[in-house]
Amino acid sequence: MPRLLLLLPTTTYRAEAFLEAAHRLNLDVTVGTEEVPALVKQQSSAVLALDFRHVEDSVRKASEFSRLDPIDAVIGVDDHTAVLAAHISAALGLPHNSVASVAAASNKHRMRTILRQQGVPVPRFAVFPIDGDPAAFAGPMAYPCVVKPLILSASCGVIRANDEQEFVGAFRRVATLLKGLGLAEREDGGRQILVEDFVPGRELALEGLLTDGQLRLLALFDKPDPLDGPFFEETIYVTPSRLPTRLQQDIVTCAASAATALGLREGPVHGELRVNDRGVWVIEMAARSIGGRCSQTLRFAADMSLEELLLRHALRMDIPSFEREKHAAGVMMLPIPYGGILREVRGQAQARAVQGIEELAITTQPGQELVPLPEGTRYLGFLMARGDRPEAVEASLREAYRRLEVVVSAVPTGGLGHPAQAGKPRVVTF
Image (cartoon, rainbow, N blue to C red; front, side):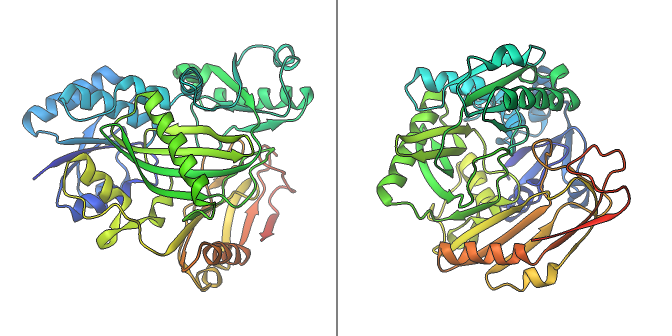
């Protein structure tokens, strides 16, 4: 029976989907983690305690484990664990991307530098130390620009600046975020801030799979909501894309060029690209699959999930088909509407009753703190929908979202969002 080493961060939305896929394939699963998630405890999966910050020690422990219980594939579910997976796979002699290529994909500065050198279209960019004087950096910048961390995801810390004054404020805000998360102390990429030209146009997400350097498109998602700032909160993803076929082909070609330039050759890639009258631009190219619970929108032959497809690919098992189901599908990442303490989310039954809605998952529990972007690192929850056409899926998601009411009590210190009077709940109706 093949054995999978699944690297899971302490907090992740991806554990359940990968564990279910492994169970369906009858795999032996060992979870490599720093702190055992509750779901792993419930499923009684074998656990290998690893400190993700110490790569050499983690590789040594995984290699020692594999001598007794051979590991056949290593999967990382986010940017950080994908890098560690490449290290471990190299040590075990398993098919893998090079460590350099995965590390480059996980660092926005390194990625853009390589892509620019290889002629792949990326915005103009520069990096600055977080302890530098933003007023000194602001003058030479072209506006509008986007200020962002090098190593965070889900639009955390990403801010548009339209002039020098906004640039200074955005830079200081991102620097404060990186220091507050402890990244400036423990991560090389946490001590610098990226500034790049704002690229106007439509944004899309690409899900692909590399085999021996060849990119296979799994899905192309439209993002119908404009992402123009000042923050870049992603909400709705819908597939298949409604863009013209020729333009979709250009997007796939650009993504393939980006993967090749970075040296990625095996496994999933997730790209964020923008399209305008000047062509296709790469914003991100990650060596992992799509984040959050968004993968649940994707179904393949024999009701195969994205995670099952990825495990089959990593283990060189038969894949019945790479074709996605014929129905349109979409997900809405429910944004954090207001900073404070979540009291309740009303209207859930009404939202689930909307035609086409398959699931509503509120992943933030009552009593937990809500932090909106750009400081926020999580969503309120997820809505999933399916339908005959992308337009119908988008309409279902918007109608279900409209029926929700989020009740939030403001934090007395006034430190988050736009605080109301302490202790008085605010009802946000969509």
